[in-house]
Length: 373
Image (cartoon, rainbow, N blue to C red; front, side, top):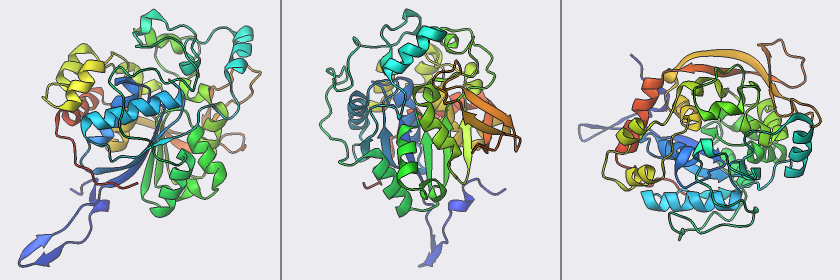
């Protein structure tokens, strides 16, 4: 049986009667809103970093769940704690391309309150167990619960870093888009060859027909099945991302994540090792659905997918309409021809296999540094 990693194997050399060879690591750039400490934004980053066959070229950070500056600080501190300060953390967009807090309030006046607004949320719902400080502006970085980072972010923009690395390794770099798409949209607009030179895009975002789960997080989509936060924070950026000429797009929407949950039992299993990483995850873990973790797992091991469909997908960017930010879809090749592309959409995944992957990666030793800015 041919391994799924066979395409990465380089020829071996016979030296002194011994075979010598190497399996190059899969190159990846992670784009994430990265609010912390720990939790559903930073745990997925740890899964990628813990994968021994992966080389993380950089982590791009934009606003979304939290403000960019604060999220950059949380990411830097996490990397220090687990012993991987070599991975570049690159500041990205603070605000969406078009959407704004004021526009969102106007929308809510016509169509009702959004359940979740990320960094724009005025009051955190008690049902969601979110560890948050008082609401603050984008330039405020409150004292970090986990301690202040000594390392600093990269001295370039996320869009610039993305373009530079894709040009350096054309066709080799996968992009994991786990937050709003603002950074990617800016890179696409700055370099119209950017998307085509990437190896593939795996994005967590959108919603089609999810079955509401029996937890508070279902409130976001129970009456609005096409609404999802990443796309709603910056709908214009999501549209630009989805319409770009990627070689391959895999979308992981809300739908397959409704059966997942970072339960206390799973947290205990995933943090059983006596390591800095496990202590960090255990201290800051909260029980959320495994939204971004599933998107990462699908990239790490595509056999995680148990059902997917090829659909034409786009995003509603009519800011005055009730469906602003909603996911639009048609059968493959049957869209209106306004730039929408056919892509692979994941609708079901092997949840026990996902949980076992999380336990395995979190409890093993952290790979040594291999990357350079």
